[in-house]
Length: 555
Image 1 (cartoon, rainbow, N blue to C red):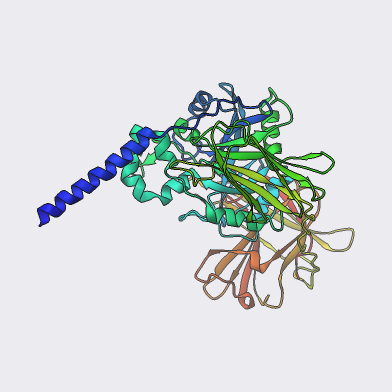
Image 2: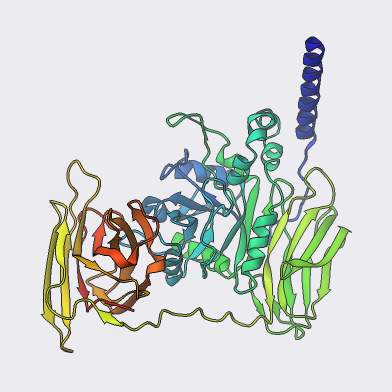
């Protein structure tokens, strides 16, 4: 009986393997012979190099990109920011490398590009990091939002550029059973088929995206998250799959209004500006090239509104150009719901009348085949007569209590080699002005170094919402505001940015994150100390500067 069961199991396994092998061997990419229009640039988003946890150098990445005729690659090495990756932009082997970072934040990971590299670390708080990049007219995408290990957790954030709708690396981790069984064999025989088999329809990611677009403007992107490695242990990695193999799977088509500049920084800014305005679409390139596809809106007067754009009124038409030699299924979505569907379409152009305001986007599928349920093309929305989103409520707070109305309120605390000096002067308005000069120095055998303005006193802050104060610095810097509560001293902190101009900073207690100690929520009735500090978490060995602080209060 056992022998028969074993034979049956082996036969079943042989059938499965045969089916998998033949599926891979028979898989063929659909032919699209149209050249890429000159106003589109084709590239890939989200990959890692030896600057963080990838196995490939910049030269190797750009070599593989050139083999695939990519116009650009966007590097996103880990760091807040990753400084070598941030300044790596350049033309390399005729491919534009755009240097960027993947920030590790308290809420998850955020891919960012187009920022000026600061003299400090970007903040770990999601909204603050987004705001900093936005201030530089850069772009931010929430990375692998539903990843099992590192999901995105702060869905209250606003003002980011978009969301990764497909992440190839995340899909691979989600399909771990397939990855450990059939995938290696299929990859050896048909790598494009094997990697595409990792992808499933991103229903939940699309729902999140549509929900955000009910109140704002956000864009969807396909991401590789390519590392060119398969970790076998903490110290041993297998160079698999290669960058070139993943470059064949997911691509980003960015529409530009002029040819890319010879200066790499300017060319990168052109790509980022187009992506910031949503003028791009994504494709599962292993199914077919999407050369020639277009999606836009025509106003009644003939004015054309591109993806990511705002139409002034309804009464116009959505236009899809599908110049392909094979049939497609097209789904047009309005405000997250199905608006129009075209099955087995063979038309080269589809025009759809729009009679109502809304957010309109489209998904294009291959009509037949193993992967007909995957969104081959995902186009960014057109926003038709959508009112501008209302500005969020500001902190518009006023101090109800001043903690340091006069005199030297803070003491300096620091590690042994760092320097810190505090002094109080009376400003022209009669209020005390605290000046704090510092230099950070690392100890030879220690990791942490810091210098701080510290005040240790039992305080009951339970009747207040948060801290409020005015500050400026000798240069742009980031500091922590930290307080400790409870008998066993749990620590909570939040970062704030200063520059040469006076700024009012209001931080509600609810936005402080738990740093250390047993209690995950602060006991505001038992605050034992608070600090304004700069350390290795937001600055660097050798950093120096001066902070000026007007009276700190509570609101």
